[in-house]
Image (cartoon, rainbow, N blue to C red; front, side, top):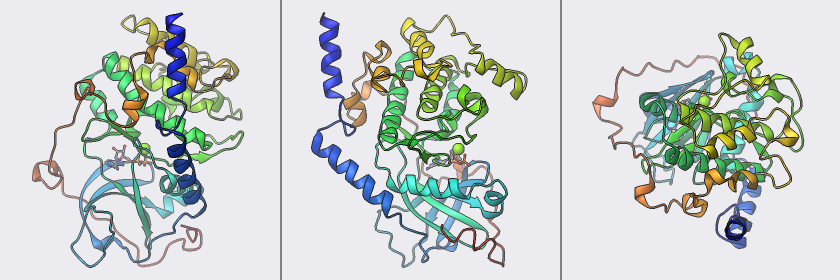
Length: 367
Ligand SMILES: Nc1ncnc2c1ncn2[C@@H]1O[C@H](COP(=O)(O)OP(=O)(O)O)[C@@H](O)[C@H]1O
Ligand SMILES: [Mg+2]
């Protein structure tokens, strides 16, 4: 009886995506809609030579993300920032791999978002060879690097991170946006120890179902492998894979090649280590279910079933959303480093070579 009352109270408090009240929710929703329908195009006043490139922060399939310092000249971005993480994407590669639409989606989603656990977007620009997205620089590195260094996390730590990913998916799904690329590489750790999700390259507004094959092998849900139409269910699958990987130090499914890996996924072949608590194993078991109609997160109560799962009983989502959690409950704070400190410059930054000809100008007209 007591636990029913507690559960009821939790549901009531957690009904707002702003974790505040109806007014705040209305404002968040209005802001999102406004921005979604008026995405600002490239800023023609900005070019790469306005920045000093400091070092590569990470690499991906279509380019790299570079830490850049805005030079002291007369451009006034009015956002109080000097350092930017600039995602540099090669137009030729994007065209070759048919990623132009994904890039447009990425900018539109980034521009529209307003969430404490997602990176902030500032502006975009382009030149003869590349397109550029400037986002907030997050100094604590990515979760992939930190997890590999640590091995695995204790469950308190897993809960703190998983709760924040839950909040991001709850917000995105509210606007019918699928994220589709959850993995530790796309999650950054901010200076205050809270997470910031980055890389919206596969994020897409989907009202109903979509069929595109995208994601990362270890995290691919069975419905994508089987080329079935899919919706929000895919994000919850990856959520469980991430919880498993954080607690075990490796993802649940494995195989000596991609074919074997996919076989393991579509046959739900995995085992939770005996070190997992009953609650964590139960949460994972209820989400890593092949049939999406019986997968937790996709039932009548939607994502609330995940939030109300006993694994999250000790989590106060309101405090996590507003980043007012007791500092003792923040499991890890990255050491503060001056981005210009020569010790962070492991190798000289390789230059970005721009063609003398404007490549694929017409195809990237919309950017
Ligand atoms: N805002 C940022 N601040 C710091 N590092 C970042 C930022 N964005 C991305 N990175 C680093 O760059 C890597 C690649 O960025 P990402 O957007 O994921 O590119 P891709 O779409 O090519 O995977 C990330 O895994 C992360 O290590
Ligand atoms: Mg990425």
